[in-house]
Image (cartoon, rainbow, N blue to C red):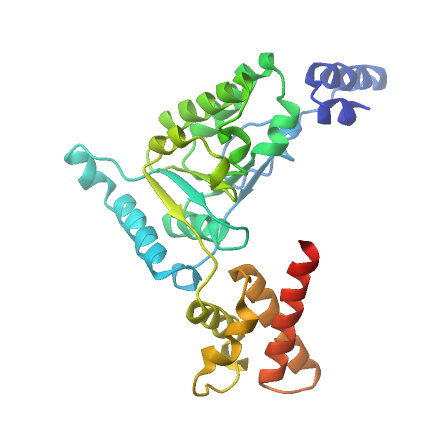
Length: 300
């Protein structure tokens, strides 16, 4: 019952029910905390389902995004590695990033790489779930307190489904949540990065863009980039290169994101393994890519 009250936004009622249970048991139950992984942030178990802390081991060279984005991410990392030098001249590294683009095009993977390259935790904040609980006007100060506690630690903070608070038709309460987010960014510790991620750029209030140091636009891969993703995933299991390879597969790449291509490549690899063959065939790849394309059509 307590969990249901919490999920429906009645946090005070949920807290009272939990206290009553503890009193009835005649025991004191210590508050659990989110899996911290050395983050050192004290957060009630109420927030465990809204905040995820991880230590990614992602590698920069494995990013499957466009060449332009690769260079821009490289620039961001270089700014942070030279933060002291920049501050001597009155500048700060870019630490307010907006990532926008279709699902599966590399936004989360890029956030993981930034965290791994800087050697700090990645804290994913699921804004849509969080706002289901902190859904009333009086909850905004509590939400701001959560942000304040987070901001004390050095980390990459990924705010997923940012359009939840960036919608240009948002209510007054949501606007106040957005202001709380901006305050969070302003008080971030040195070396931290705040990343807002959205699949729906079109719904964002245009005025919000000026609050970010840079906007990274993720897109579906070109046929050449798609082939690179496939070969990167398959490694030694990739088919032998042939003339006009991209032209052969191009029609099967249509509409597939980097994530979908990765799934298709792994599916083709499993087919080869089950036949006890060392390499994926062209037919394996075409079959796997066709299945992913059909999946997307069914999903629509």
